[in-house]
Length: 155
Image (cartoon, rainbow, N blue to C red; front, side):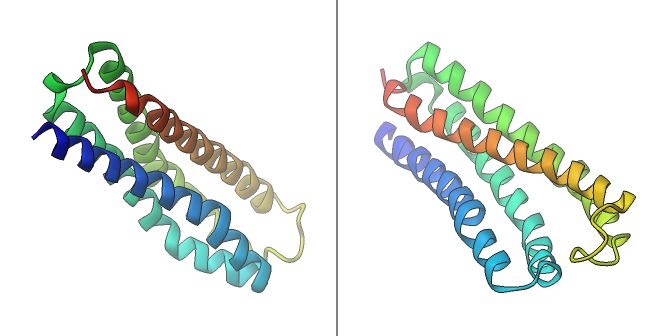
């Protein structure tokens, strides 16, 4: 039973971190390299809500698995892992349900992302997007920390 729990926990971490790396460092740059900014932005804007919810779901699933096998894992690493998982879930929840809707609303007011970079709407979008990107990298670092911590979990 403990081995199955560890396998599922590993799978969740791999899907979560692998998905983040793929979307952040492969898919998004490819889209912006091969399409103009407006089209690439529309494609990413369509994908991003599912991306954030995918990350939220996997962080919550990781926390649920950790709690389900709480007894089988060492006290300090499991507490730290739980803090990291719940922290990631809180950030992803904030981004999914608060920050992203703000970004989408501001994006609708931008006529074009290829002209007028000094417009107030573009500046506001840039600020919100920078916050979203920083939070995304923080959650990615959180996940990497969980992978590093993983070998310390079993008793």
